[in-house]
Amino acid sequence: MLDVTPLQTAVDALADRLRTLPQSRLDQGAAAEALALARQLATRAQLIERPGETPYELPDAGMFAAGDQLAVAGHDLVEALRTAAARPADSDAKVAPADELAEAVRCVRAAAERC
Image 1 (tube, rainbow, N blue to C red):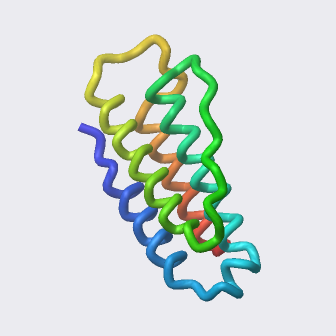
Image 2 (cartoon, rainbow, N blue to C red; image 1 turned 30 degrees about the vertical axis):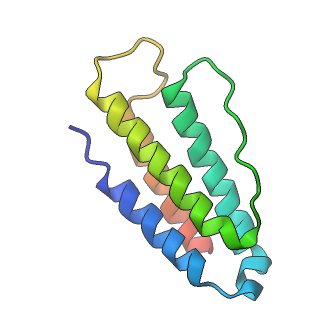
């Protein structure tokens, strides 16, 4: 069983921090950074869930929704990875769930340092 706790914890911590930032910090780039990360995580989840299909882009819901968008996209990826790890090896899978998990955790932690 794939332990997705590191990703879930990292996403939740960053999302919580974004929700507490003042407008000035969000406007200085934290919201844009969070949206870019949320879009990346959403794309990863969609590619796992529907390999071969073009992923949809997560819309920009505004700077005050950045933390929530990150949380939703991150949790979607957590569930996609958990499901992918539970099923037999799939020839359509481009990256193993454990590798995808490690890369996602790295991306979230890097974004947290920049926010």
